[in-house]
Image 1 (spheres, rainbow, N blue to C red):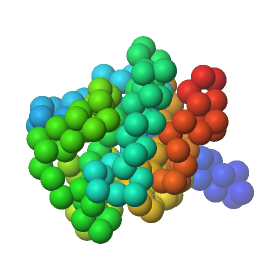
Image 2: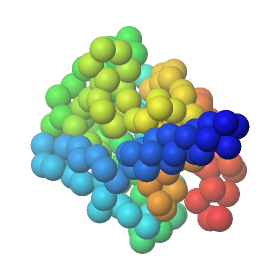
Image 3: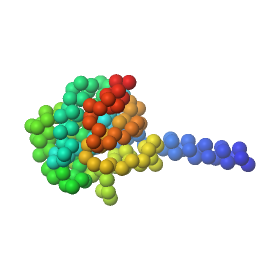
Image 4: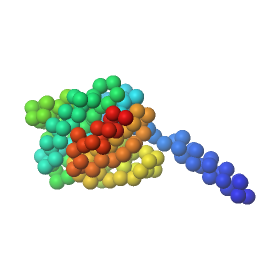
Length: 178
C-alpha cells in the first residue's frame, strides 16, 4: 500500500511539474501596444522590474540603464513594466511614460505597457511571478515599485529582489555574470 501511495504521489507531482507554465508562455504588450512574446527571450537571463516615474526609487532607472548597457545583449535583458499600484506613482499614459524614460534616463531596455502587478486586476505574468502554484518555485508579493524578479535562461524564476536593492547590487551583477 505504501508503494502505491508513493507512486500515486509521484505521478501527481510529475503532472503538476509538467503543467507548470514557464516565463516563455506569456505574451505581453510593449510600451507601444505591440505584442511581445517572452519566448523571444529564450536563452537569456531576464530581470523583470515594475516601474513608476513619481517614486522615490525612480532614480533606479539610471542604474537599470547602466546595467543594461554593461550586460545587455545576447545573454541578458531587462524588461520594465510600469504599474500604478503604489500610491498612484505611475499616473501617465504609455506614451508619457516612454517619453519620461527616454528624456530623463535614456532608457533603451524594453519597456512594456502599463499593467497591474497586484490586486484583483493583477496581470497574468505577475500572477505567475508571485505564485508558487504557478511558477513552481516560490510565493512572493510585490512590495513596492522597482521590485526585481530574476528569470534564468530556461524561463524559470530564480529569485525576487527587494525594491530598495539597487540594480547594480553585487548579488544581481554576480547572477548576471555566472
